[in-house]
Length: 304
Image (tube, rainbow, N blue to C red; front, side, top):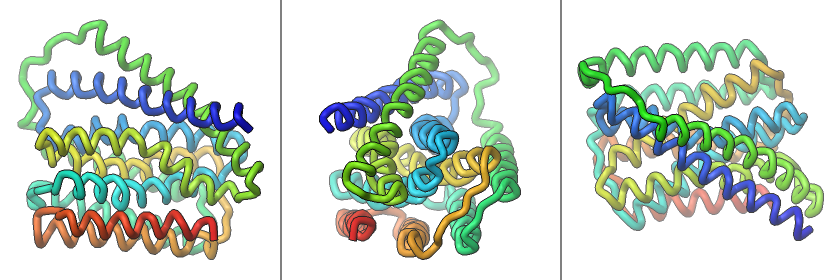
């Protein structure tokens, strides 16, 4: 039992530092390109912080633990808004100009609703996976065209530090995901808890550690655009890239009734976030507390 817990915690630690190195290398690349903060948050930072979800989900899928994959994606999207934005807003109330990224938030809403609709039929196939990946491709094209004028005309050459940071991050994520998933499965078996419950809670929380750290640091430095953009991009990446790639590898069959409440919470969190930012352009401490309460509720019901 002690070895299992150590394996689980050490895997989470590697996931965190692996993503941290990737984020640092990504920021260096983005700075050389002269990309604005919101674009960095939605793309580079969100991609870096969502890599744990991607690698853990692919590894779990190849290991035959599809419930962990599904739980990880839904649980991570809930944790990103409920726990991470909620806790960040409680500590550092967030101000945000909704107009600069309203298309991105509307796109997140549509994708979340579509994902929830597919889940209702209790089966996800390669067709949905390809659809998600195509949607991600079109979205990236849209972002590149929207921010085309933000790039510096002169692109400086990369140095070895960026390359080293990148590969150290990839290695840390790979090894961390292996230990993390093995530890999670062992804990589920030891406590007699389903893989879905572990994936929706412990695994989702563990793979969301990079988002939590990034958003807290960004908000503390007054970079609200990065903090919010990180969550926006991460939730999109979780559905479009993580679920998309996972479904290309294997189809998924599951019982919707088990995840129904969590899917509803994911939908409500997403809609509330869009409405609050659209009409108030900020997330207050009170709103943050409400998000936190919703997250705690979603966490508890998985073990009842």
